[in-house]
Image 1 (spheres, rainbow, N blue to C red):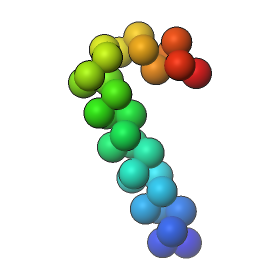
Image 2 (image 1 turned 120 degrees about the vertical axis):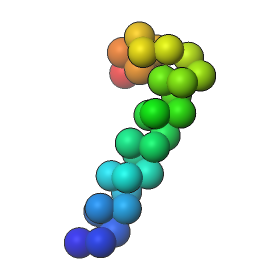
Image 3 (image 1 turned 90 degrees about the vertical axis):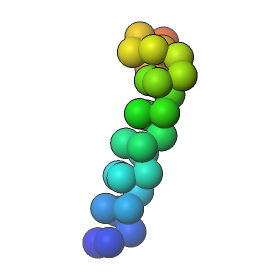
Length: 31
C-alpha cells in the first residue's frame, strides 16, 4: 500500500509544519 505510506508521510510533514508555525500545543487545540 504505497499510497497509504505516502499519505502518512504527507500527514507527518504537515503536522511538523504546523508545530513549527504555531507551537506544540496547537495540534491539541485543533484536534
